[in-house]
Amino acid sequence: KAGVTQTPRYLIKTRGQQVTLSCSPISGHRSVSWYQQTPGQGLQFLFEYFSETQRNKGNFPGRFSGRQFSNSRSEMNVSTLELGDSALYLCASSLQPAGGRQETQYFGPGTRLLVL
Amino acid sequence: QKEVEQDPGPLSVPEGAIVSLNCTYSNSAFQYFMWYRQYSRKGPELLMYTYSSGNKEDGRFTAQVDKSSKYISLFIRDSQPSDSATYLCAMPNQGGKLIFGQGTELSVKP
Image (cartoon, rainbow over all chains, first blue to last red; front, side, top):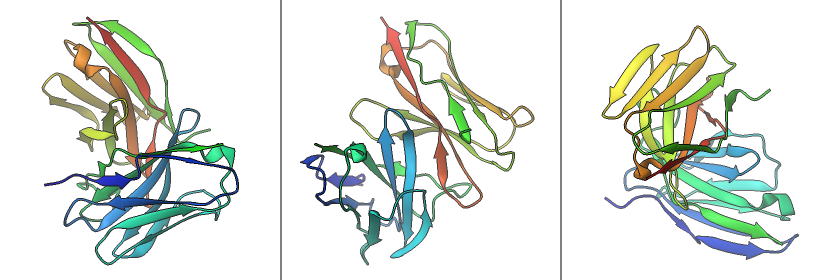
Protein backbone atom coordinates (compact mmCIF):
# COMPACT_ATOMS: atom_id res chain seq x y z
CA LYS A 1 0.00 0.00 0.00
CA ALA A 2 1.45 3.39 -0.94
CA GLY A 3 2.27 5.75 1.90
CA VAL A 4 1.32 9.36 2.37
CA THR A 5 2.61 11.50 -0.46
CA GLN A 6 3.20 15.21 -0.41
CA THR A 7 3.92 17.57 -3.25
CA PRO A 8 6.00 19.47 -3.89
CA ARG A 9 8.89 18.29 -1.73
CA TYR A 10 10.72 21.60 -1.83
CA LEU A 11 9.52 25.10 -2.49
CA ILE A 12 11.07 28.58 -2.48
CA LYS A 13 8.81 31.60 -2.30
CA THR A 14 9.19 35.27 -1.51
CA ARG A 15 7.46 37.29 1.18
CA GLY A 16 3.93 38.27 0.30
CA GLN A 17 3.34 35.38 -2.07
CA GLN A 18 0.93 32.56 -1.42
CA VAL A 19 1.55 28.84 -1.58
CA THR A 20 -0.53 25.68 -1.88
CA LEU A 21 0.72 22.34 -0.64
CA SER A 22 -0.85 19.00 -1.47
CA CYS A 23 -1.23 15.77 0.47
CA SER A 24 -2.51 12.40 -0.70
CA PRO A 25 -3.35 10.13 2.22
CA ILE A 26 -2.99 6.38 2.37
CA SER A 27 -5.78 4.73 0.42
CA GLY A 28 -8.85 4.35 2.63
CA HIS A 29 -7.75 6.92 5.19
CA ARG A 30 -10.30 9.66 5.73
CA SER A 31 -8.48 11.84 8.24
CA VAL A 32 -5.70 14.21 7.21
CA SER A 33 -3.79 16.39 9.65
CA TRP A 34 -1.27 19.10 8.89
CA TYR A 35 1.69 20.11 11.02
CA GLN A 36 4.39 22.74 10.86
CA GLN A 37 7.87 21.73 12.01
CA THR A 38 10.57 24.29 12.80
CA PRO A 39 13.80 23.99 14.80
CA GLY A 40 12.56 26.52 17.34
CA GLN A 41 8.97 25.43 17.88
CA GLY A 42 9.11 21.76 16.94
CA LEU A 43 6.05 20.07 15.50
CA GLN A 44 2.92 22.16 15.80
CA PHE A 45 -0.57 21.11 14.83
CA LEU A 46 -2.20 23.21 12.12
CA PHE A 47 -5.54 21.53 11.41
CA GLU A 48 -7.27 18.25 10.81
CA TYR A 49 -9.82 17.31 8.20
CA PHE A 50 -12.10 14.33 8.31
CA SER A 51 -14.61 13.54 5.59
CA GLU A 52 -14.12 16.99 4.01
CA THR A 53 -14.84 18.83 7.28
CA GLN A 54 -12.34 20.65 9.44
CA ARG A 55 -12.44 18.83 12.73
CA ASN A 56 -9.72 20.60 14.66
CA LYS A 57 -7.63 23.71 14.32
CA GLY A 58 -4.39 24.78 15.94
CA ASN A 59 -3.29 28.24 17.00
CA PHE A 60 -2.22 29.63 13.66
CA PRO A 61 -3.36 32.86 11.98
CA GLY A 62 -6.07 32.87 9.37
CA ARG A 63 -3.42 33.06 6.63
CA PHE A 64 -3.19 29.30 7.04
CA SER A 65 -6.12 27.44 5.59
CA GLY A 66 -6.89 24.03 4.26
CA ARG A 67 -9.46 21.86 2.63
CA GLN A 68 -10.16 18.25 1.91
CA PHE A 69 -11.67 16.78 -1.20
CA SER A 70 -14.12 13.92 -1.57
CA ASN A 71 -11.25 11.52 -2.38
CA SER A 72 -9.64 12.52 0.98
CA ARG A 73 -6.78 14.37 -0.68
CA SER A 74 -6.03 17.58 1.13
CA GLU A 75 -4.46 20.91 0.38
CA MET A 76 -3.21 23.60 2.67
CA ASN A 77 -2.76 27.20 1.62
CA VAL A 78 -0.67 29.94 3.17
CA SER A 79 -1.37 33.45 1.96
CA THR A 80 0.84 36.52 2.34
CA LEU A 81 3.91 34.51 3.23
CA GLU A 82 6.22 35.74 5.98
CA LEU A 83 9.85 34.82 6.62
CA GLY A 84 8.75 32.93 9.73
CA ASP A 85 6.64 30.59 7.62
CA SER A 86 9.81 28.84 6.48
CA ALA A 87 9.38 25.32 7.80
CA LEU A 88 8.80 21.69 7.03
CA TYR A 89 5.08 21.11 6.52
CA LEU A 90 4.01 17.60 7.32
CA CYS A 91 0.81 15.84 6.49
CA ALA A 92 -0.42 12.77 8.34
CA SER A 93 -3.31 10.46 7.60
CA SER A 94 -5.31 8.00 9.65
CA LEU A 95 -8.38 5.84 9.15
CA GLN A 96 -10.45 7.64 11.74
CA PRO A 97 -10.05 11.04 13.43
CA ALA A 98 -6.65 11.50 14.98
CA GLY A 99 -6.09 11.38 18.71
CA GLY A 100 -8.18 8.32 19.36
CA ARG A 101 -6.91 5.55 21.56
CA GLN A 102 -6.02 3.15 18.79
CA GLU A 103 -5.59 5.57 15.95
CA THR A 104 -2.18 5.69 14.34
CA GLN A 105 -1.17 8.62 12.20
CA TYR A 106 1.10 7.97 9.24
CA PHE A 107 3.24 10.88 8.17
CA GLY A 108 4.37 11.90 4.73
CA PRO A 109 7.93 13.09 3.99
CA GLY A 110 6.90 16.73 4.19
CA THR A 111 7.23 19.81 2.01
CA ARG A 112 10.16 22.04 2.88
CA LEU A 113 9.17 25.65 2.33
CA LEU A 114 11.71 28.46 2.26
CA VAL A 115 10.44 32.02 2.27
CA LEU A 116 12.94 34.65 1.15
CA GLN B 1 4.92 26.81 29.70
CA LYS B 2 4.60 24.22 26.95
CA GLU B 3 2.20 21.34 27.52
CA VAL B 4 4.93 18.85 26.64
CA GLU B 5 8.59 19.43 27.41
CA GLN B 6 11.45 17.47 25.90
CA ASP B 7 15.18 18.13 25.99
CA PRO B 8 16.21 18.71 22.35
CA GLY B 9 19.72 17.40 22.93
CA PRO B 10 21.71 16.60 20.88
CA LEU B 11 22.53 13.35 22.60
CA SER B 12 25.57 11.38 21.46
CA VAL B 13 26.27 7.84 22.71
CA PRO B 14 28.59 5.00 21.70
CA GLU B 15 27.17 1.94 19.96
CA GLY B 16 25.80 -0.57 22.46
CA ALA B 17 24.89 2.03 25.08
CA ILE B 18 21.53 2.24 26.80
CA VAL B 19 19.73 5.41 25.80
CA SER B 20 17.16 7.17 27.93
CA LEU B 21 14.86 9.76 26.35
CA ASN B 22 12.35 11.65 28.46
CA CYS B 23 9.38 13.96 28.32
CA THR B 24 7.34 15.73 30.94
CA TYR B 25 3.83 17.01 30.49
CA SER B 26 1.62 19.39 32.39
CA ASN B 27 -1.91 18.24 31.53
CA SER B 28 -3.02 15.45 33.83
CA ALA B 29 -5.86 14.67 31.40
CA PHE B 30 -3.45 13.19 28.86
CA GLN B 31 -4.28 9.51 28.56
CA TYR B 32 -2.25 8.13 25.68
CA PHE B 33 1.43 8.51 25.01
CA MET B 34 3.36 7.93 21.83
CA TRP B 35 6.95 7.93 20.70
CA TYR B 36 7.79 8.80 17.12
CA ARG B 37 11.12 8.43 15.38
CA GLN B 38 12.10 10.83 12.62
CA TYR B 39 15.05 10.19 10.36
CA SER B 40 16.64 13.08 8.52
CA ARG B 41 14.55 14.27 5.57
CA LYS B 42 11.71 11.94 6.49
CA GLY B 43 8.38 12.27 8.26
CA PRO B 44 7.94 10.91 11.79
CA GLU B 45 6.99 7.25 12.18
CA LEU B 46 5.20 5.77 15.17
CA LEU B 47 7.56 3.74 17.31
CA MET B 48 5.55 2.93 20.40
CA TYR B 49 2.16 3.64 21.88
CA THR B 50 1.24 3.32 25.55
CA TYR B 51 -1.89 3.97 27.53
CA SER B 52 -1.41 3.07 31.15
CA SER B 53 1.30 3.72 33.67
CA GLY B 54 4.07 1.15 33.70
CA ASN B 55 6.36 -0.34 31.10
CA LYS B 56 5.80 -1.57 27.58
CA GLU B 57 8.52 -3.44 25.77
CA ASP B 58 9.05 -3.97 22.05
CA GLY B 59 12.36 -5.52 21.12
CA ARG B 60 15.15 -3.19 22.16
CA PHE B 61 12.68 -0.41 22.99
CA THR B 62 10.89 0.11 26.30
CA ALA B 63 8.35 2.85 26.91
CA GLN B 64 7.68 3.86 30.48
CA VAL B 65 4.86 6.03 31.78
CA ASP B 66 4.57 7.54 35.23
CA LYS B 67 1.27 9.41 35.33
CA SER B 68 1.71 10.49 38.93
CA SER B 69 4.86 12.41 37.97
CA LYS B 70 3.62 13.30 34.47
CA TYR B 71 6.80 11.80 33.10
CA ILE B 72 7.36 9.42 30.20
CA SER B 73 10.54 7.74 29.01
CA LEU B 74 11.80 5.73 26.08
CA PHE B 75 14.73 3.39 26.66
CA ILE B 76 16.78 1.94 23.83
CA ARG B 77 18.96 -1.04 24.72
CA ASP B 78 22.04 -2.04 22.74
CA SER B 79 21.80 1.14 20.66
CA GLN B 80 22.85 0.92 17.03
CA PRO B 81 24.03 3.58 14.56
CA SER B 82 20.74 2.98 12.72
CA ASP B 83 18.95 4.34 15.79
CA SER B 84 20.41 7.78 15.04
CA ALA B 85 17.36 9.96 14.53
CA THR B 86 15.19 12.51 16.29
CA TYR B 87 12.79 11.01 18.82
CA LEU B 88 9.56 12.82 19.55
CA CYS B 89 7.09 12.16 22.31
CA ALA B 90 3.47 12.98 21.57
CA MET B 91 0.14 12.84 23.32
CA PRO B 92 -3.38 13.71 22.15
CA ASN B 93 -5.29 16.30 24.17
CA GLN B 94 -8.98 16.05 24.93
CA GLY B 95 -9.82 17.69 21.64
CA GLY B 96 -7.87 15.11 19.70
CA LYS B 97 -4.97 17.37 18.76
CA LEU B 98 -1.64 15.62 18.91
CA ILE B 99 0.79 17.63 21.06
CA PHE B 100 4.44 16.91 20.33
CA GLY B 101 7.55 17.45 22.38
CA GLN B 102 10.43 19.37 20.86
CA GLY B 103 12.19 16.14 19.86
CA THR B 104 15.57 14.82 21.02
CA GLU B 105 18.27 14.39 18.40
CA LEU B 106 20.14 11.15 19.04
CA SER B 107 23.43 10.13 17.47
CA VAL B 108 24.84 6.64 18.03
CA LYS B 109 28.53 6.47 17.17
CA PRO B 110 30.05 3.18 15.89
